[in-house]
Length: 156
Image (tube, rainbow, N blue to C red; front, side):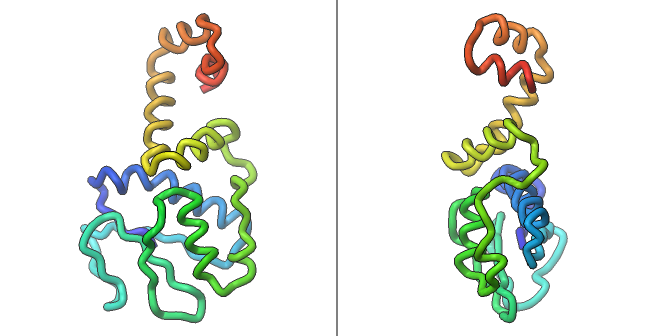
């Protein structure tokens, strides 16, 4: 469970990563529940969940009522690795690191690449995409420049 504050910068950066993880788990039909909760509007569902800041992420392995506080990298790979490491279910342990089928193609691949280098990578890519969509003249200049990035920028 991802406990967030809607106004938090780190939480906002984690939303698209967490959504990507949820899509990946759903596509793989893994027996997991990926949930999120506004920690500013809700209290802890049990005494086992305690947090002092946002975001707070917990994983409760099947058959256990004890949540484990997530301490890894706040990336798709970091979250997936933590779940695989602490799960006792073979179908969870066998989840691949491949992107979900039917995902957004090159855009999602670029987002995954940037996530490897920064926890706020998804936000950076989203801002770049928004900038190019909102500024047609910039997109045209990039396309005319012949730069390798212009092909991807024109497709966005």
